[in-house]
Length: 326
Image 1: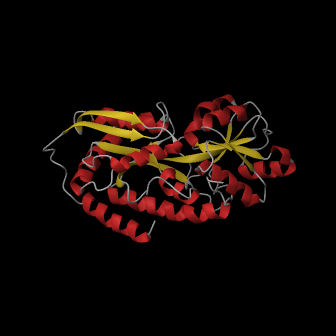
Image 2: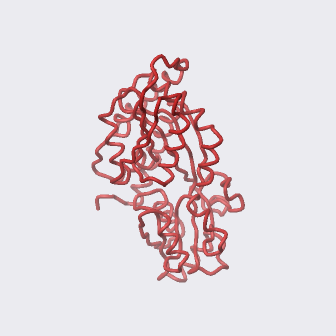
Image 3: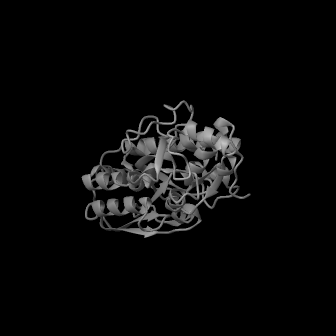
């Protein structure tokens, strides 16, 4: 992707965000939220809550389509050929747009040319946790890294997927201490957490919300979070920065996009409907239960955030040396 694509698109969505609110002269009969992940997960939950909120106002009926496969790629690819009248809205995590281009030699989509930014949906931090295989005296990430130096046979961590932000967080933590912290990819965070709680795995890196149901039992201990400030859902847990591990501030977002060539009017109408929906108490509280913070934005703000994350992750992925094709 070229820098001019980012800059040109930012100008276009800035113009869209400045337009007056849509007067709804022709309400849609049917609108679809498309997610690349299965029913019941965080991505699907966000889509279903928004669909319920926007039914009757944005469109007469709003439904969710789960186009799963290839780590979210299939859903994004599908948007290239969808009608750009606002009837198709993609919801996707940042990783598929800001990280995948750096780890795959070929992608079936261009995250800039093939999508039209509309609004952020939510943001969340990651956490690093240990389980029953790690002594209770280990209470911080630096202490954990010291422990694995003394116990190299246990120097491993799990993450929800290879090439994910939690994967790279764990690798970077190992590099920061000169430790060969081996990565074990799982299909989702929960299977990794269960192995960790059972003593088969020392640590897990994953979204904060995935750890919340397990913290009370004592078999899962959250050592740190990755945000710039303490996470609102686990305020007693310090950040990696607070523990002296610098340049380790990472978060993720879910964004909402239209197909390519959506007009400024269509973008503004979708944005004007999404923003109050994301502020609804049922959406905010429902996402909070999963460790997600509902957040909206203008189209231009989402475009700028995507560009910043794309630019940041390129050098990080290169330094780690990971490719999904290897």
